[in-house]
Image 1 (cartoon, rainbow, N blue to C red):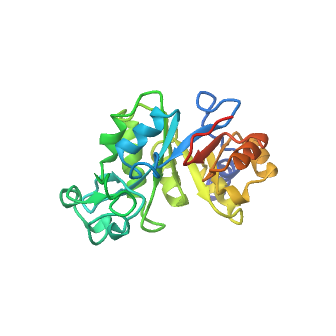
Image 2: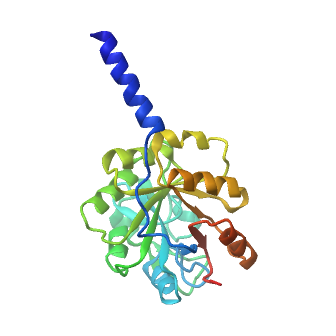
Image 3: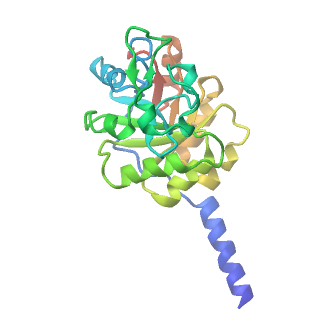
Length: 261
């Protein structure tokens, strides 16, 4: 009996590692790269705010990227930084501050002192964005084992509170694994700056690869497409860089500027 269980366990592991398939994304990406607004329009309006994301859509973006963290009382808010002192008039860290206190904080105090804004809840932002916009939600965990924000976002998507097409992306493979365990049909994206550990994708099954622009190669893109994965590259602002990525047949380009063609 023990041998039977061992054989079954080995078969399950082999299937999990070598025979997984990404979520079908034919209804998301087309024949040319999709331009994804990096935190909205951060050079015009404070990043990761509803106003910044809406402005990106108004100037032509069909997809937006927004960074999220969780407060101490587990409210998911839109912010690139856990450290409140980097871009707000608050003190301390988001994950050590309750949402009630976070609401009093203004963001954009250094980048846009005349256009400061509240740090918004992710749900409040999502429900005010157009339904036909793709939203790439990037999780900013405090550490490798901090998967709570990813699970909360996955719950929001699974409960249909978010009705847009959505990607959950992060540098944290543990968070992506948790999302796939909780909701396998949610599209996930793995952010990385080196291909050294790319073999590990067979353990957490990202549907998209999100490489930093400087490490993208034709081989990387071709191998991802062969597996059925999409490739969305960050953060590319120059026209030559975008044209080069178009030639590599990438699926998405995360950028601060809308400049198709």
